Image (cartoon, rainbow, N blue to C red; front, side, top):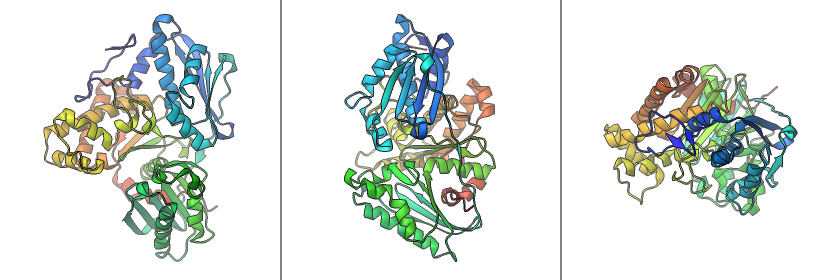
Length: 459
């Protein structure tokens, strides 16, 4: 197969999406002929900087491939590492094109606004010489694993909230309550729901020593800078959102509270359950949520918002409605992926149904071994296999734990089976290194809210 002059090999294309061009596979093939060194650096808060040295062709006939490679690489870094300043080192022509793309009126204006919301400053793309590339500065931080004392663990989901009362690592009470945070404009609704959960858990223990929170979004400290749970809250009330978890904890008393991204807490739950590190957790639900802990059980301080990171280079790939970009993870590893593939499988879904209800229809067909539904899940398994190739280029992954509503039932088993088969057939060394699994019983026992409870270090 060929794309922009680069020949790449894919033996197991998704049967319902044969136009799929896996970024990781294409990137490996592209780099085999690239010879001109360049570097890309992404700077975030506190001067922390991730630096990636790579190569391009730098010839007129490969100019389109060079631009596509660097533009997608930068996009991936912005949503995996995160940052407000991007250095393009050693390729001025591409740097100038990216400066235009990452402007308020440019093609990447969504990313520009997101970075501003996150860091409260404008994004900068700088055109610098290779020798002026900044030095890397990474700071991994320990996360969780503290179970002593009486703790509240809270998991803020988009459709339900879960809370656990945990005493010396044992869950003495847990509950799930349906709520609708994504449709509520008044942050008082969110605050009241959080406080109610905290108070319920507190009533089941003799005291509260600490509170840990797992929540969708990107955080600075405990402040949700950008979070889908508060998507309807107007900008003028952002200060109430940024302080919401700290204020809720004060309703319980003067106790420490730590808030972490739900993807990272998922990875932490996996690491605690399996007793090891280098764990990536991927939840396929309303969107794609990803977290990662390194070999020492630390988080890297990265965004890990891979729902907006590219996985498919196909020019006609489905666009994400929010970011407007094509080929990004949320359309491949979420209920949107199932809905996207259903018509291609010959399944007509009632347009009046919600996305969650459409997923349930396909899951019901899969429970009856409908071959059309099976084709959907096998296709997602192929997406996943080739994306393991991509993610492994940026993260040291030894265990990829996949979970979420899309992974439930027979469909999830088929996704996992096809992913493992393709990796073993086409990438045997990677298949040996990266174990792609569903959560085991120990991990399920630890659970998301229990892992959240372990976040604060009482020492």
